[in-house]
Length: 328
Image 1 (tube, rainbow, N blue to C red):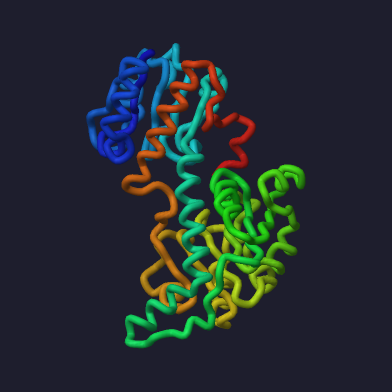
Image 2: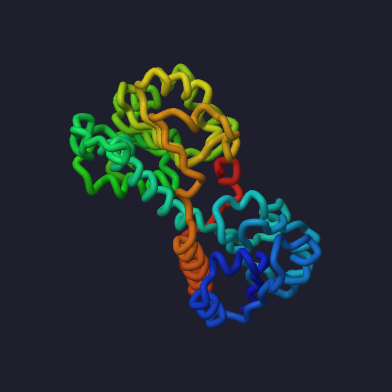
C-alpha cells in the first residue's frame, strides 16, 4: 500500500511521533511532505500521486478533482484532525473513497476537560484559590461534591458520549438532550433523555457538546439561559457560536450562574471583552481538544483505522456522506 501524508512537516511533527511513523511504514510505503506550512493544491497533487491512502490534517487543501485525478487508486482518506469539511469534496464521494477522522480521539480530551471543569467548579476551587492567594482562608460554604446532583449533557456526539461515560463513575443523575438519540439509546448510555427546556430547569451542571450549525447558532439565548437554576455551572467546550454571549453576560452579572468557557465567538474575544473581567466566568484558550502529548491520541487513531481497513474491520472514525450536514 502506498500512503501519502499531505500535511506540512510542522503539523506532522506536532501530531505524529516516531513510533507512529514506524507503524505506518510497517503498513505500507510512506510518502512525507517535507515542507512546512499548508500544502497548495499543486503540491498535494504531487504528494498524492499513485497513493492508495492519504493522511490529511489541519491546513490541508480540499481534495478536489484535480488533486484526486493524480491518485486513481486512492481508496481511503484518514483525516488527522476533527471536522473533515475543509478537505472533503463531492469528488471524494463520487469516487467511492472512504473517509475517516480523529473526532473520537479529540472527543476524549474534550470530555476529560469538561469533567475537570465540572469537579473544580462544583468544589468552588476557582474562587477559593483567588481568596487564598489574596491572604484569605475560605470556609468552603459554597463547595459541592459531584454527588446527588443532576448533570445535563447537551449533545451526545463523540465528546458528549464520553463525558457521559466518565460521569457514570459518580453518583449523579445524568440527563441528555439530543434529538438524534432515542430514549432507549440514552438509557443504554446511562442517561435520561429530556427536552432542552426541562434539562435547563433541572440541571446543576450543564455541559455543551454541540457542533456549530445554523440550527445551533445561539441556541443558548436569553430565554433559555434564564431557565437555568441559580448556581448552575455552564460548561462550553464545543463552539462559541452556540451561546449568545451578550445574554450570558447579563445572566452572569446577576451572580446567578458560573460559566467555564473554552470557546468563544469570535476567538479570541477582544481585549476588553466583558467576559474577561467577570469573577464568575473562567476562560481558557480552546485547549479542550488534543494539545501537546494528547496529539498522540490522534496519530494512534489514524494508525488504528488504517490497520482496520487493511484487515477488513469497521473503521472507528469513518464519516459518511449523509452525515456531513450534521458535522461541526
